[in-house]
Amino acid sequence: MTKPALTLYLAAPRGFCAGVDRAIKIVEMALEKWGAPVYVRHEIVHNKFVVDGLRDKGAVFVEELAECPDDRPVIFSAHGVPKSVPNAAQARNMIYVDATCPLVSKVHIEAQRHADNGLQMIMIGHAGHPETVGTMGQLPEGEVLLVETSQDVAAIEVRDKQRLAYVTQTTLSVDDTADIVAALKARFPAIVGPHKEDICYATTNRQEAVKAMAPKCDAILVVGAPNSSNSKRLVEVGARAGCSYAQLVQRADDIDWRALEGITSIGITAGASAPEVLIDEVIDAFRTRFDVTQTLVETAQENVEFKVPRILRKAG
Image (cartoon, rainbow, N blue to C red; front, side, top):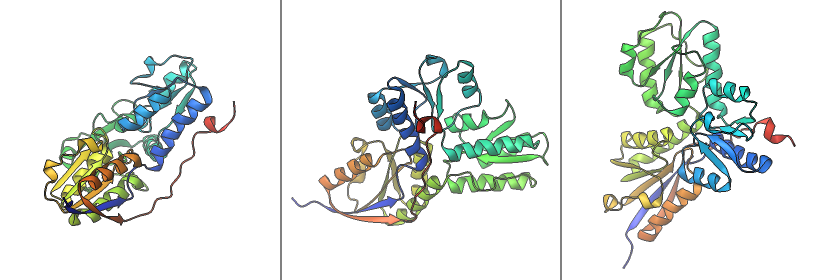
């Protein structure tokens, strides 16, 4: 029986970004340097396959620093942590390595600089997301107000309309964030924004590739974790850009084949913490069922690389 024909559009860029790559490398290098176990506060990145792989090598994932012994190294996840966490690690004389993505650290520095200049901060982000918790935790309680939607802007109460600044989570929808920023500027014309946009290059690039791909596709699958903010945004961007069926899958096993009956084209991309091996697994699953013609949809090239912390680069 002949297989039905399928055009498979593969987004580029997709998958791992430089910050995720660095964070995983940090855990691997820490295990090489200090041996197992090495403790990691929170998932190093939001991907079960990656976390399970590191756990197999000797990483122990915990929710809070209190669960870590004093005499073993601890790594802070790529999403960043409140200032109280490294302070607590120092108080216990622990060896710790900060795997916070440098682009998240940039937002932390920005928030601190604005606060030092006497400005109250507004953060555009998702409540409870580790990155939002970490960024808001750079400043004392109550100094950062959170808005999640443009509707939230009307309800926030600020100290002084003339002395405000905003920062954003790095993994948001570019278009949604633009709407919220517009609402902030309309209500608070004096508000100060970042020198350079906080949404990171990788998030922006992956969303642009999906926008370019979506009009050609009957369906789009985003390989990523359900707790990955940037992966969920890719699903939303695909649906908004004209693809009627956009779904998040963690592995090939999660594909809903019944929903894809009769399709002639599919778009595939992956969130910034999804490894290429999972993307290949999904493509292979389509090749077993369809006669696939693969086309690359490339909207940008990425060659960003971040150094690992000095403590891992020096001997001893």
